[in-house]
Length: 532
Picture (tube, rainbow, N blue to C red):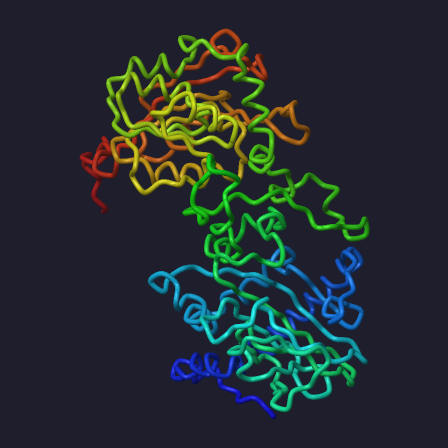
């Protein structure tokens, strides 16, 4: 038996595609990828297989032999190897079908789904037929699909090169396929390169014998409803060079909003409204793999992510060093609190970035009687603050992705934290502050000061830096922001528990004027000379 194949150009008119998947369990679409795209992905896969397969973990033997990879070339986790794979994850032809299959039946038919598996396979000559199996781990029983699978065919699929075989309608049953058994109603997929096979993960499927030479590469993507566990921990295995260049949509598709919280002090919902931070990760490399330019000064994408290091451990270590019982600070020595007491502002909604346990925010809460929120990367600091200052709303988050709505605050404070932020995140931080700050609102900054930008080694963690500059310039370059006050002081005499006592600090007060409050240019009314 052969499968019915649909043309991509008629997909918008083929509402029966979804019906076919529901009834038969699968559908085939042709011309989804061009020949050029197929060749590109095959070259990437051959490169990645050659580079990373020597490092693969050994597989355990099973009676169904599905984990034995000696008969095929496999590339896992393409999302962490090359950003050029990403357009396959949300192909505009296929995404509406996925949404229909994986959102239907959820609350308001709108619950998210995410990627579960991102791999590619190419059987070698002589590879035996693969055991019929299902990817959903449980028989479908005719209910809403839990898992959908997309197979991009980068080579022709035919009867001699190990094509996919499946049993139509098997996703409706309550049994598993018997090991080694062939079923009379099996279908072998025969389609041209560039075609796509979509099927319900509960459908019985496998491969045929590979008896011909030549490659038969296929990219296999598994998608599941948001509460299903993926094959690999994507949050832990994306290099910063890729993570920093993908959109929020791709992060959500990789599960960065459906990761469970560590405990009830972090979050009490299984889903998050913001993407969680990814962990530091580096792919294995041999000396021969390292490009020659790596001996030069590393670029931003090659340096250590300070944010990741602080989220992983250093933020908690910083809190322990600076806010232990013996090191608790005298509040009257804090330059920012002294500045705040002299201001003629009475904000109603205050946010402090780098709030530690909220000690400064608590003082401002008593001063202004305002609603106060704070964020800090230290879990221990937030936990201590929630216990000591229950009136404050404290969150574990970072400045470049604020978990608040637009124009939520009329006062925003940087509590001596910008010097530790990644330099590539500064523009993101300025954008986020502008987004959440109301017109007419104030920004208060306390941090290291230098009239020119430079960095010193951060001696608590090798490879990290303390960055010095005039931080009010993040905002005052723009005509909508006005510097009201700026005071430079000696770091050692006026601040507490210094990491580097030989430097100066500055406190600044900046006001967001808004476009209607910008002063008129004094040159605007001058008579312009007429042209002769």
